[in-house]
Amino acid sequence: MTELLAGEKRFDCELVIFDKNGTLVDQQKLLLALAIARRDSVRRELGRKSSDLWEKVVGVDLRKLFIDHSGPLATAARREELVVASVAAYLGDKSWSDAKKLVERVYDVADASMKSPYGSVLLEGVLDTLRDLRKHGLKMAIASTDTHSRTVESFKTLGLAELFDAIVGSDDVSDVKPSSMMVMRILEQTCIASNEAVMVGDSLSDMQMGRNAGLKACIGVLTGFTPKEKLEPLADVVLGSVADLRAV
Image (cartoon, rainbow, N blue to C red; front, side, top):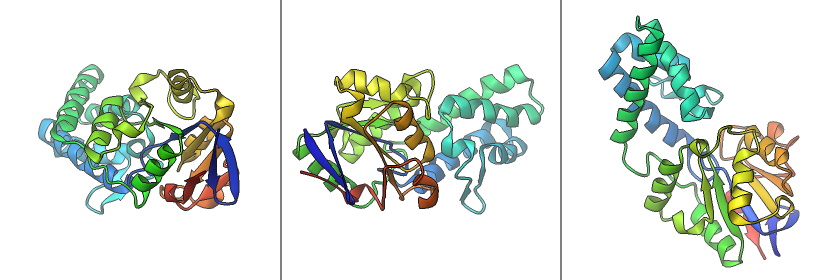
């Protein structure tokens, strides 16, 4: 079994499960790219009133390039955000039934307009660290609230896809973080026991997911939006970034 070094802590493990946004890629840049694409699509299809309402309900203010780190755009799975965004169309004088249909089409158009890697920019040191972990025999996986296809395609573009043994997106399971469902799917696909795996993420939901799945350890990183004092109660150790991980 490989030993994973995380600061002053050492964990014997076979599998490292990573969150994507805020852990491996720059979350702010990704969310801004996504917000602009979806806002523009809403405005084209539903008008400025609905697009202004859309910004409020999903938690963005693009005039100020502001993203609410705890809002729906930043934290919700796509299917959950669709419901929230439908409220903007409904308040813009659409029936609830029409609002849901329109918003789903608008989101499909917005997402199709974006090209891989969909605003994803790797954080410093991530690629070298992942290659080092793989070189030492560790299996690696992704548990992301992004969709499966967007995650796979963005990682192909970034040159990461071949490093992962499993990728689970929000559309692969019926319940997302902090539910353990994503992790359990990964453990099943990799044939690894929960006490042989660790979770690495930047959010409370990442840490809670790892705890709910009974993983050996949960490692927090400070490259997302969650401060150290909030991560520490749920994490076994908090690091500056994924680049601080080592394997021996």
